[in-house]
Length: 84
Image (cartoon, rainbow, N blue to C red; front, side, top):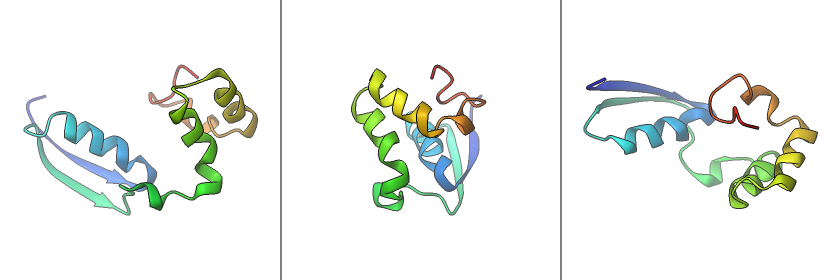
């Protein structure tokens, strides 16, 4: 794909922004609707296990916390955390 416009929404916005930053010359437009692009926009209580997993470089203990709380359930069908 030589170029694209990307639509970002809600908590998926950082993923879209990372894609845009990876190849900025290919990104022709970013359309955002309520896209969160900053850490302060995430609720700390809900996202604490996810941030712990990220900080641990995907440690087994942190993955088990996410499995136990069900945080990964909505993501398993997608490609972001398919290996969990």
